[in-house]
Image (cartoon, rainbow, N blue to C red):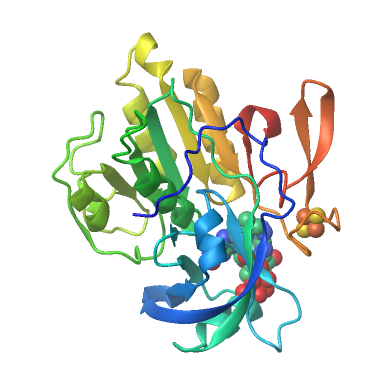
Length: 302
Ligand SMILES: Cc1cc2nc3c(=O)[nH]c(=O)nc-3n(C[C@H](O)[C@H](O)[C@H](O)COP(=O)(O)OP(=O)(O)OC[C@H]3O[C@@H](n4cnc5c(N)ncnc54)[C@H](O)[C@@H]3O)c2cc1C
Ligand code: FES
C-alpha cells in the first residue's frame, strides 16, 4: 500500500503551486482486459510521492496526439515510485496510449487537483465508482483501510456495464442491506478485508442487476439516525451517477464528495476552460475543475 500523507485536511485547502511535477514516465507494466480496458504502471517517483486519492495525471499519450489526457490515479506507491492507471481506449488519445509497450516513455504531469477529504468524525465511508470512476475509489479504499492513525471503514460499491478488469469472487464479508444474491466482490479488496459489492445491467454473476446507487441506498437504509451522521459518500463516474449519488446523499442527509468530469485543455489552472459554477459562502463562483477540483462537495455543485 502507498504511504501517503494523512488526507483529512480541509477540502480545497491545498495549494497547487510547486506540487505538480513533469516526469518522463517509463511504462513498467501493461495489462489488457476485455472491452479495450488497460491497466498501466509507470515509473514516476515525484508524482507517486505526492499523490493523494482523487488526484489525476495529465498524460501526453503520443507525439501524434496534440493534447494531453487526464487520467485518475488508481494507485501511487511512494516507496517504489510508481503510478497505476486504468483506461479505456475511447478516442485517439487513449487508443494511442494503449498501443505503447513496456519500456517506452510518456510525459506525465501530476499529481493534479484537490482529492477526496475524509473526515475523522465520519468513519463510515462509502466509495461509489462507476465506469472510469472506478480507479480513484481503489486508491481511496486502500489508502483509508487499516490506517493506524484513523478510524475509516471503507465500503466499496462499483458499477460497470463492461466486464470488471479485476478478478471477482463471492465475498467473504457480510454487507448489510444487500439484496439476495448480490455477493460478487473484487478479490483483491476482499483479500485485504475491504468489503465491496458490484452492480451491472450486463448480467454478470453475483452483481446487483441495476444501478450502483441502488445498493448504496439499500445499505444506507439499514442505518439509524446516529449512524447516518457518521456516513460520507465519495463518488466518481459519469455525471448521471454523480447526480444520483448527490440525490441519495440528500435523501439520507449524509455528506457527499463528488469528482467532477470536464473537458480539460491545460489541466493546471491556466486556461479556465474547465470552469463550473460552485456554491460558496460568498455566493456562486466559477471554479476550475482541474485545480480547484476535481473533487467538490456534492451539495455545492448539484
Ligand atoms: C479528472 C479526470 C479523470 C479521468 N480519469 C480517467 C480514467 O481514469 N480512465 C479513463 O479511461 N478516462 C478518464 N478520464 C476521461 C478521459 O480523460 C477522456 O475520456 C479523454 O478525453 C479520452 O481521450 P481520447 O482521445 O481517448 O478520447 P476523446 O476523443 O477525447 O473522447 C472520447 C469521448 O469521451 C468524451 N469525453 C472526453 N472527455 C470527457 C470528459 N471530461 N467528460 C465527459 N466526456 C468526455 C468525448 O466527448 C468523446 O465522446 C478522466 C477525465 C477527467 C476529467
Ligand atoms: S483545464 Fe485549463 S484551467 Fe482547467
